[in-house]
Length: 101
Image (cartoon, rainbow, N blue to C red; front, side, top):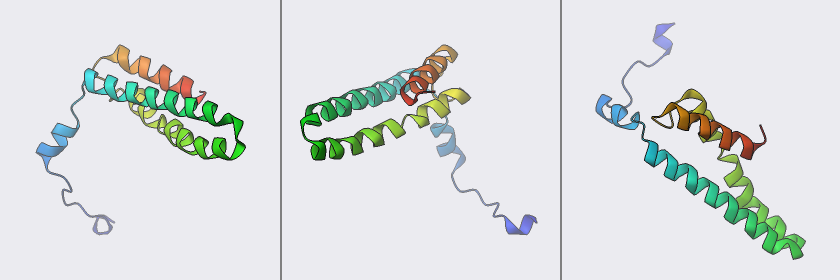
């Protein structure tokens, strides 16, 4: 069965080590940017509420932003988004509340 799977290294170990580094500030900025995008898209839907066609069009970016909250939920659940454990817990709660979990 081993012959069915490719075992070559797809990414250099140095690059992988750099990608696996956790940063509280970088993750906070990303989560804040997602929250700002969520608020902005929600405001857009409210502004366009007078026209059903415009509101329907405005819901599309809102849905896209809303769906991206699964990523921080997933990473914070595994404890890989933030360096600090408490911030991962906060990230899980914020993302979970946004998603309705």
